[in-house]
Image 1 (cartoon, rainbow, N blue to C red):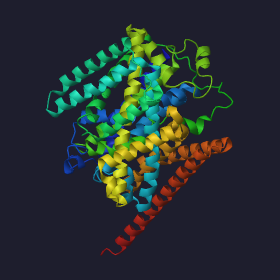
Image 2: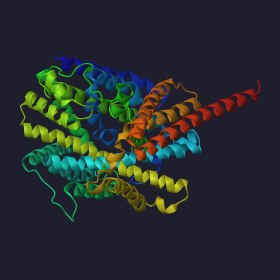
Image 3: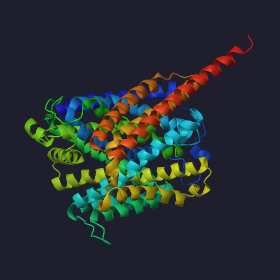
Length: 562
């Protein structure tokens, strides 16, 4: 019964965020203008800049930013207790993530679809642009390298997810062609979801394993295949694969959320996890500040700003759609994070508190696997579906979300490298194929160069992802805040979240720095110091820019005639 109360309170809070708070932010702070000509129309090239139906764009945006993070982060953070996790997810979605995502989308839309790093030059200054670029590239490198490894391992550990994961690509290609030819969107949505779930059933009865090829292990073989696919997908027009695949995955989320939330009301399971865990392991990290970087996607995430200002802003049909795409995308992710907390805290995963503590005996021992196990049990108990089908369904959902994030991540890396070509006058980097090869090569070098034959190199620097990602979120909110101040609009709605996120993420980065130093992990020490110094310099540059703006404004006002 406790789980129902958690769901009701969380959903009520997010409903307030969407219907009340986001409307206020859109109309009074960002002042979204339906007559503003968006970059999608101004630079329409049929490849990257494409005016897009807001429902399809929402699907792209949501599934690109979601990945596996709103599942993995909350599933790990429940270790400290379900109350802190629920509070951070709910309040973070309302006051942090929605404003951050919609704000980055709006800011990029007002600067010709530039990435948050490139537009920071206009808003703050040239040096800040370089600082942003360093952090953005590190975040994308971590995400792409690690998600390639995560998907490859999921294929090996859950071979029943292989067929539906690749079938989703074929379904998306067909839907992309039909949408481009103006077929009925509702009919295509129903047909796409039916085809996807037929493939889930097929996968549950026909598992598929990849044989070892060219001396590569199975995991390494999948990593190579995934990066070949991601490179190819990143160069296709967005309407051909990226949009329809993300749209179908968004619809899949609705089905998954319906099953999970519906099962909660049908089963009404009690919560086995403690509200606040007092039996934490002696080696476990402190909840403050680590909670706020462990749960990123689902509360607030710097990667979202890269997507908002990278792919989504180039597809925005009308500026008011930024509220629907950005804020509602954050609400969708928060809803997934909330039900993840319920799935890993309730009796569906652990019948008693004692069993729960056995599963969560140490920090980080449970994650996506706990969500799949607890969620599948919940769906089976609530709807009577076969356990094998329920498990495959949720495993496929995790893989598809990670895959769409990887698709978008490689495309975003290409954008960043092409922006480098323009900024530093290196024409060769402006070429799409060259930029894509540079992006994929960097990820592969990290995966195999630092990780050995199993390609686990991304995992080497992954411990830095949480703090680096959240520092980027704070820097994005910082750029939006400076932009609002220059426009003479209230900035406290981004300033307060920015200050909190930067404080917690920098604190977490210092905690990790001490840990890396004690372990003698000098690579992570070096990267951590770079990120901390970079963020500090960006803050100082922003304060200087605000001071210059106010000084110039006062000077201009002084010379005005009475």
